[in-house]
Image 1: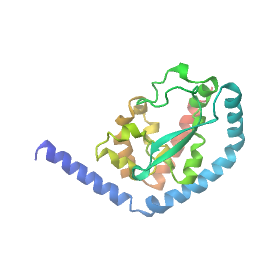
Image 2: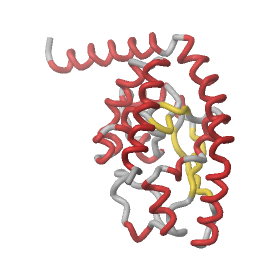
Image 3: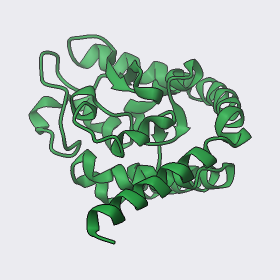
Image 4: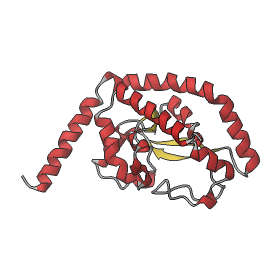
Amino acid sequence: MNLTETNHTYMKDTTETLEIKLESFYSKRGKYIIDFFAALILVLLFTPLMILIAVLIKVSSRGPVLFSHNRVGINNNLFLIYKFRSLHIDTPSYSENPESTDDQRITSVGKWIRKTSLDELPQLFNVIKGDMSLVGPRPEMPFLAEKYEDSENQRHLVRPGMTGLWQLSPKRKGTIREGIPIDLEYIKNISLWNDFKILLRTFKVFWDDNTY
């Protein structure tokens, strides 16, 4: 068997594995039900903090409190993702490498909410709307997704997540496209238990990175 045939067989097996995993009750119904109620609870818990962040953003720089732009969601459908604005207005907002932003673009409050990932709290409303999940692949930017091969596009078979394997991986410091195999690995092993472990790791990383 030559290399082309081997790759074709691998991708066929991967696709079949993904289809089987996505037929489970958890993938089709349970995951969204848990996401919905968990996000509602988190919104209630974090409402005072979100109000504080909104006030700080408003008084420290010109522009709106929230930032939104298009991302690619489940089945390649576009949706508006919400974040607290961390950039000065009239600056470019797209980057192939999330870590390669010029510090001059970021506001003083923005540096704090980015370091603590608090800028992503408004995505809880994306989860409630059904655009996103608490755990899943990173929500992709359209200009990158349109360049994807069919095999890479399989990452859009599920809702993108606020956190996920790629978001916790050292590879997040590289280009986003380098993380696609990690996203596909997540989908191949999607389960309530794995999502729970990823959420625990996320809280641990947040605590370790922000404890002095």
